[in-house]
Image 1 (cartoon, rainbow, N blue to C red):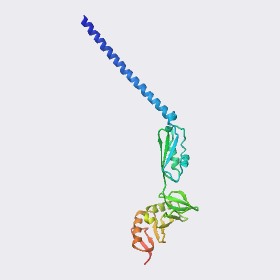
Image 2: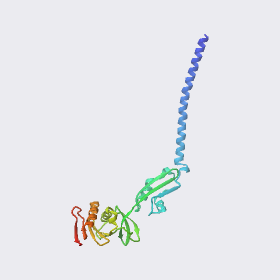
Image 3: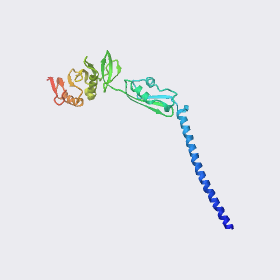
Image 4: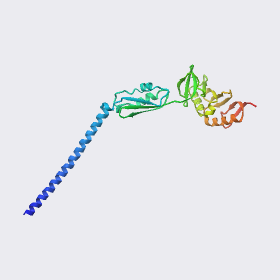
Amino acid sequence: MEQDERTALRTRRRFARRQWARRWMSLRYAVAALALLAVLATSVYLVFFSTTLQVRKVAVAGNELLSDAKVRRIADVPLGEQLALVDLARADARVGALAEVASVDVTRTWPDGVRIEVVERTAVAVVELDGRLRGLDADGVVFRDYRSVPQGMPLIRSGAAAGTDALREAATVVSALPEDLATRVDHVEVATVDQITLVMRDQRQVLWGSAEESELKAQVIDALMTAQQARVYDVSVPGNPTVREPVG
């Protein structure tokens, strides 16, 4: 009889332990779920409502032509706005629309900043437009003013029939010139997109034609001017270059 009672007691204890284990497992899940909800709620509060993650500074980098103040003004990133809610695409588009900017990258810098990384255009030539000397980049974009033509930089003189496309062609030509050849160019005359002429500082002329095959033309004219002295060189067809008014 006592043996039966002890067996029954052990059975009841094992049953109670199993019941408690099941209840504890359920309780553990509930505690974990509550903890997760607390973490999420805290995160939402910090990101969208807390002053800790509001925009307090806008850093500008990579700019020389543009002032920090102008980039910040154009970007128009509102100080005090929640950093997570800042419209980076809008700021990127506004700064990217500036003529001086080749590319821009606007990013969040947690916990309280926005960084605007600017890559400005680089002038390869100067063109006179409406009485102003303007810098022209390799893509033919006019983007800055000069008081005088910088030393070693070619001046582009465009004719009445030369439009935006012709300036773009001229920029492509200048960009293809080796540095030692580019520094010997006094100016580039642009009549049309396929009538581009280099005038050297010693007054020799190079009939370039269009910007097509400019890299090959640059190689040909470099070798041709070294091999033969002349007043006019024609590399408009680089496979069949010619000279006019040979000297000596």
